[in-house]
Structure formats: C-alpha cells, structure tokens
Amino acid sequence: MKSYLLSGLLFICVAGLPAQAQTATNNKALLSNATERLLNLDKGKIELASVSAAVIDGKTGAPLYQKHAEMMMPIASITKLMTAMVTLDAKLPLNEKIQFTERHKKANNNYFSRIRIDSQLPRKDVIRIALMSSENMASSALGHTYPGGIKAFVRAMNVKARQLGMMHSHFVDATGLSQHNISTASDLAIMVRAAASYPEIAEYSRTPGYTARFSHPRYSLRYGNTNALVHSKSWQIDVTKTGYLDEAGRCLVMLTEINGRETVMVMLNSYGKRTPIGDASRIKRWLTTGESGKISSSARHYQRQTLQELLQHPVLEQLALQ
Image (cartoon, rainbow, N blue to C red; front, side, top):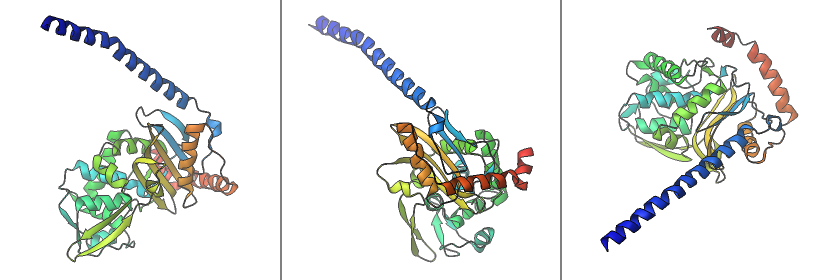
C-alpha cells in the first residue's frame, strides 16, 4: 500500500512540473506582451499640461513617456521625499519627540505654520505630516535635528541623490521652499521608485487625513493630504508627493497601479491648481486606451512662456554647467 501511495505521489509531482512550467511561461509571455504594448503606445496621442513630465514602468524603470524630462527646474516640496529618506536612513528613533523651535521657523523665512513654538511631536508623525500635508516646519525640524545639524542633513541629501543616480539634482534645504532645490523629471522618477522601498514613506505619503497630537503644550491639529487622488476609489496610490512654488509651478509625483502594473508619474510645473491631477488622469487614460485627450489653449501658452523663462534662468544655467 505504501509503495502504491509513494508511486502516486511521485507521479503527481512529476506530472505537475510541466504544467507549472507552462503556467510560468504563459505568465511571462503575458507580462512581456503587456510591456511591449506599453512601450509601443503612440506618443503623439498624449498631451499634458505640465511643462515637464515622465512616465516610468515601476518595476523595470523603462520610460513609457517623456516630455522635457531632462530639463533642470525647481521642484518645491517634492524635496520632502528626499528629506524623509535621509531621515529614515539615519535610523533615528521614530518615537523620539522632536521639539519645534523658533530657529526652525526662521529657517523657513517665517513661513506660516499652525505648529506652536516649543511644542513636541514624535519623529514618525513629523515625517507623516511633512509628506502627506507638506508641513514645512515639520520638514525643517527634521533637517535641523539630524546628527550634525542642517548642513550635515543637506550634505546627506546630495550624497543620497548621487548614490541613486540622480545626477542632475541639487538640494539646499529640507523643505523645498528654496527655488535652488532643482531636479529633472527623469531624476525624480528614480527618487520615487527609491522612496517606495521605505514602508514608512509609502504609508505616510498616502495617508488621506491625520490628527497630530502635540505635547508641551498639549493640543491637536488635523491634517489632510495635498493630493486629492488619495481619496479616490479609482486610484491605487503607493507613494505620492505634491509641490508648489511660484518658480516651480504645481508639481506632482506618484507611484500608482494601473491595470495591475506599477507606474511612476512625474509632472512638473503646471499653472493650475488641479492641472497635475488632470495630467495624471490623462496619463492613466493614455496607458489604458491609447489616447489622453487634449489640453486647453491657455495651458499651451503657459508651457511656451515657461520654457523660455527656464532656458534663461541664471541659476539653472550655472548648475547645468557643473
């Protein structure tokens, strides 16, 4: 009886191998066909309002679409993804309370914040509100409480950028309030993929809303995500960050899933508050249907004007020559 059972089990195992191998081959073929379809999408059928953009396959890093993707430009609060990575790389205690000081506020040119001076918040919550709600004083505090202070922090940001292969990026502060924090859409696609490997960044950046509970004194502040798409059931977002400065326009980066495939979207310098959201939808439509739809004539005019200004920007010219 034992001999019969063993023989039967052996038959099942041996017979099952070709079926498993065939399934793996079929899955690989399907994946290959899907990748080929994406790579061969008609680039003439997509139009975006953002001045610069990049759409990247999240798994392979293959570029699916690029628009002025190598142009260096200010990136505003997209900077905060690098701030979060450098903070987490330092392995600082996430439950340790950070105290907000007048120095942190002055470092932001006294930019408005609801956070009270001398109050405290655990480092993990400071990272969370910096990412999801783009709280500048939180980002400033992360930089100034880094071992060695803000100079060491900024140095670590630039070292991290080079390690990742972001060769056309430069950071001068932890918040992105400086127009001298610059990068390219291609470099930021690299940064988004790297940021996705940090579970904390993935969780914090896509948090729809959060109540931060401060101490000394005791009070609470409610924060909302600056990317409205995290509230939409039609989007599955893994990592996201928005940014805005007059010099940078409206910016948005995301790692999202479209038809089950991880896709990185980078949209830089849009003139309207909801323009990056519209561009994200146009990209999604193009990836699924092959056509994105058209943008407005005012968006086209803004792009032409902005491109001329960027090409004559003295700081960007100097950095491009370095």
